[in-house]
Image 1 (spheres, rainbow over the protein chains, first blue to last red):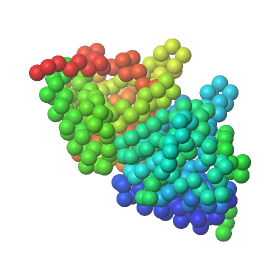
Image 2 (cartoon, each protein chain N blue to C red; image 1 turned 45 degrees about the horizontal axis):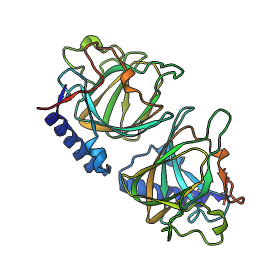
Image 3 (cartoon, chains in turn cyan, orange; image 1 turned 45 degrees about the vertical axis):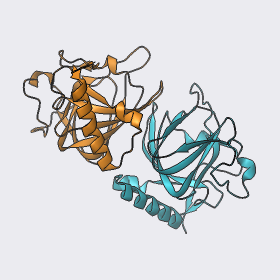
Image 4 (cartoon, each protein chain N blue to C red; image 1 turned 120 degrees about the vertical axis):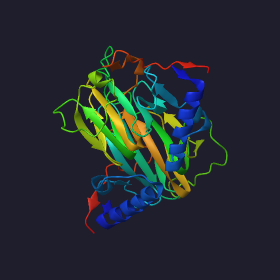
Length: 182
Length: 182
């Protein structure tokens, strides 16, 4: 659940970052920045902000705007009908992102797992993404990510996005955001 | 035909623009900037520079770097087997781009059609793209574009890219670039 005023606050912080980095949005895109409040009531810690540039039945492109140490929690994109599941490429544009994927666990990971949610973070193979670095996540595989102390801007290139089918490890999470009046 | 020294010169100009705009490439990506010399021997007038971030069997993302008044000549992306043809979204990041697509011809277009090639520019419906503006081109439809007096940076999001199948209106054009020693 996201209040209108918190939504606007997070949108304004996102716009400020984009302005600082020289990324131009139309007024309509600014109004439509998605504040992904996942039902945990802690969007500044667990959540992110998304600009969807285009999402067709063939491809999708988004900008992911992350506040300092904000975490997108562990999830995967399962097959849907004839679609093998969303495949996505993260390209870091600014800041630092630590991405965690299936594979050999990295000792002493950089991210801070949100306290109280430790049970819902299970893949620990760390990929460091600095500006210019990118990584492609295969369909139907678990992943999560957290930005560094400055926050981060990440471009996401992918196959068609169907967020409502995302499977989160944490059963408390709801992907579809509800905005309510204050 | 593109000489090694001209390739390097165009790559350096492209890198300078990206640096100015805060777009970071890895050293390998810088070396791999594609200078699209189309066989007309006038790449600064007819051609463009491309960074391919990712090209999978599902989606593709590129950065198109255009010098002042550089033109990508008229072409289309035809169906290939079960693929209906490449669908692509151009998003202007910096500068101005005039995109021409099928439809009602625009009187007094802004682009300057390269002299001597007038016969090979047939679609004249102008779409103005300034930073933050984007336009999606359906598969198998003719289009061409030219940057304004400052040049332009355009992000391209698309289905899978198979450049070798592009069909150009001008029969003199060769899409596959050959680089030769000076």
